[in-house]
Image (cartoon, rainbow, N blue to C red; front, top):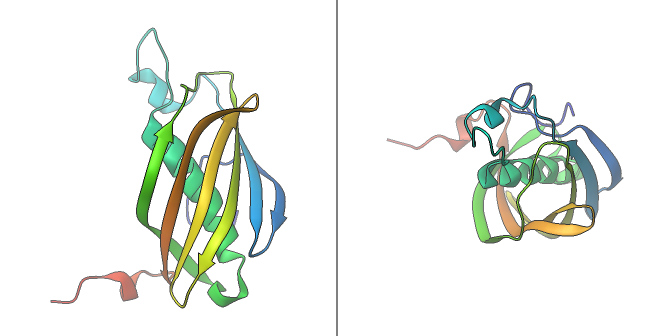
Length: 144
């Protein structure tokens, strides 16, 4: 988990179960009623926001990308989300199982296919593109 800068309360990975550098990763998030986002999304009908499912997949993907020797001691910034599809809702008590597969790695970018499941049912699938830069982010700032 030291590979990504995310920490509580915005780190949504409980554990990495499998990792093949430059190939694929599997990770898990135990979704509990204590998640702060359930307080307002939605009272009496708690549903994990879709954008946070994407964020969770992006965090898992970041670990995979940053395990590539080409990106040692770098940070992966989300650059694009392609064709995100949501198939079912995620509720407290669900175990979100993520699998991310590397599609492409270039000089400063990487793309992955990402799927989140609950009990084997697809919750969300998407392709994510990352821009990889220095940990301080200075090389990612807009030039005036």
